[in-house]
Image (cartoon, rainbow, N blue to C red; front, side):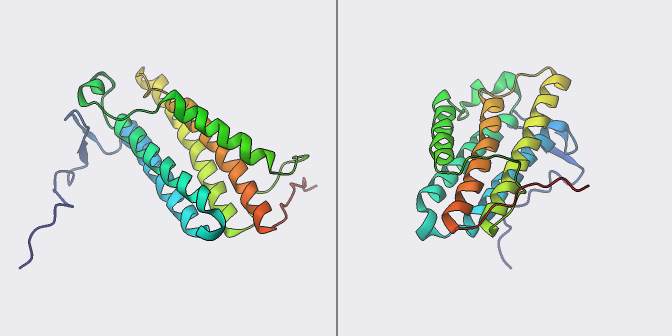
Length: 192
């Protein structure tokens, strides 16, 4: 007989889970939903990385893997009660992370053609997966703000600006990937 895996604990079988600080809450709680969305974004980034060719986008893949680590940092803070975050010395997002994102956005956007109209998400498979990342970022941002309002709880430091910049980053990266692959963007044409 094989040894029991550490993957399952059976502690969540009744619909509850534990926060970092030990509090047990329902798996349907808004906090769980929020950091579950962060986990989903991280998985979509994994899909985006898998769709990029390392030879063509090595620098971008390296940065996306760094972003995945930032999302784990954010998720660990969202999974902890605000008044206990310092007790656990959780990794936090710094102002430098935001500045780094802004620099990446500036660099990528300078290599993209000027936008004169809205574009449809898509183009290449790689670009389409990055647009999915962008929309999940926006969803997380909305849920973060609603969580802060509903629970009157401070969000983890730099969380809201980070998610706001991330969606911009994924937009310009999706466009850059299409440009580099020679895929023409499709402009939005209102259907009358």
